[in-house]
Image (cartoon, rainbow, N blue to C red; front, side, top):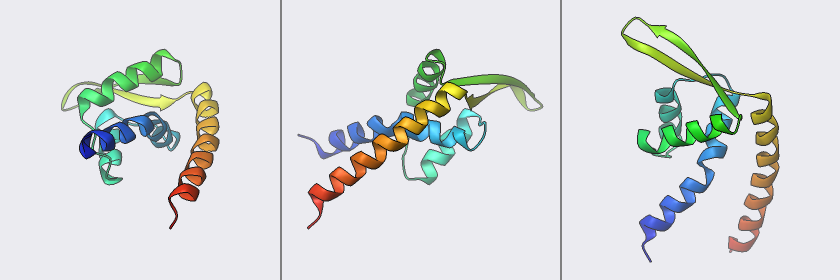
Length: 108
């Protein structure tokens, strides 16, 4: 079993939660989302982010608006919906319970 593969799978499992948490603070352009993830030491590429944003939008957890750009094509700014906020509230509870369970099992 590869350590890198296991680490990648662990990161993928929390990306939706992290994206919703970022957008809870305010709307963001995908490159801003990538930057926030990078600053948190979660390196994600566009090829991973865009399908997740599309899926979250299709599930009506996110929405977006177009904004004209002075330096290129229009940009899509994503924001969390009311359904997304409700879902995120449930994920916060799940994350707390999961974190406490893992910490209790891994304490030395």
